Length: 157
Image (cartoon, rainbow, N blue to C red; front, side, top):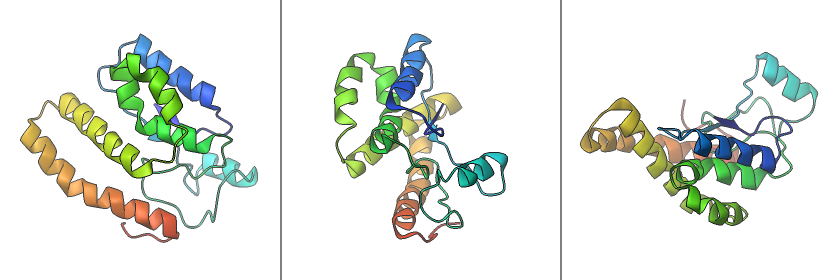
């Protein structure tokens, strides 16, 4: 599942969530589109002036934020972060639809990490201790990438 496609609306992103609820996805997981420089999609985005910021300074993570100009960017980014909970607990969808309007980035980041960790553990068939070991080795990179994205420089390669 990829959120933040060029021109994507919040309603289209919610349709992705509803489809995953309907098919009862076992391991809900999503990413934000990253149109890398040198690719056809990257070139399209650059030509259409859809890239936000300097195309030469690109974030490493496709979990943090969308690099595209989107009409409802905050809501789509937040929906991506809450995707696991919306799919696994469909009764939360009305609440999530309201909550994604609020700038609770750190809170949503933590929820995203827990959801991602749960899906990863289940999909890989590993123990919680192994999952936590892997999570702790990667969480630093996750937060350093966020810091790098906000400053426009790369902290992690």
